[in-house]
Image 1 (cartoon, rainbow, N blue to C red):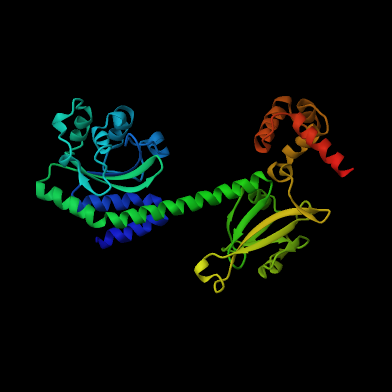
Image 2 (image 1 turned 90 degrees about the vertical axis):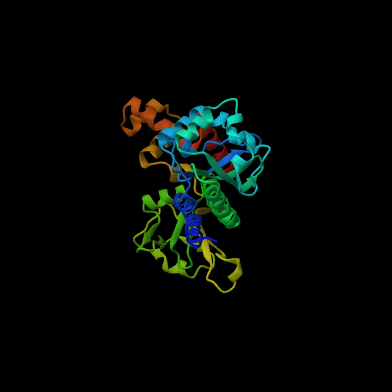
Length: 364
């Protein structure tokens, strides 16, 4: 196994941009002209657009091809990729040379091979990195006019390293999935009007959602020092067993309304559940009748000007009238109202007036 490839792949697990270095090293080791990692349709084996390819014709997963060559391929040849068609019947679960399963001269449409020949490519070693429902991920090493022995050496290199590369790629994808799941969970908390952050064992803010960021920007919570230790208002009601939370109380932080702060521990590593200090998920809200409830979305998601216009509209004013109340022109009032609707996910003023009526009825 190639030790340098192992080191580069380990770095790429934590930073997807570094897969370009993995590909560049494989090109050097095999003499390949280019290398790519692509998501492919499970039935057609055609490349599926990733965002970078679609918008910029560039990706850390493409190495060795010019932007012009990739743009031409994506616009004109993706659905006419003869090698992709062949892979539907000769699936590269293990590394294989395309020249051994298909003769380019036998292709009725030569446009794809004209493209690869223009790039100095005569063959490709291809193998699967990951398979998932409906799709699979391929790694291609595009080879130039090498001798049979040199092509075999490139294939042997791929065969020697592909098992490790598959595991490294799948681990990297799992980490991406975990990160996306974290974003989704935080976004869901934000949609539920719950400000939240994740801290280290001593209250170091590591992750946060948009509503926490609003509280932070408005000075209702804070951080201190290079490690960004969480600060909360001294008047906040603290819940949970986080010993660091008491020292997080600060006289310099003042919330608009009394906050309740809940700190819930979770293990950063289940292998050392009872030995390593826990991390914490911290949520912020306020109590009504002794029951924790989220912060109303309009109180944390809107700017001060937006809240004033919101309150005027909720009280029964038209948008134009609300603009006069807060001292802005009619056109500016409608711009602010559009921002409010987008942030709160509402369609019209009737919704917030109805919600207000329901809240009053429940209170009575």
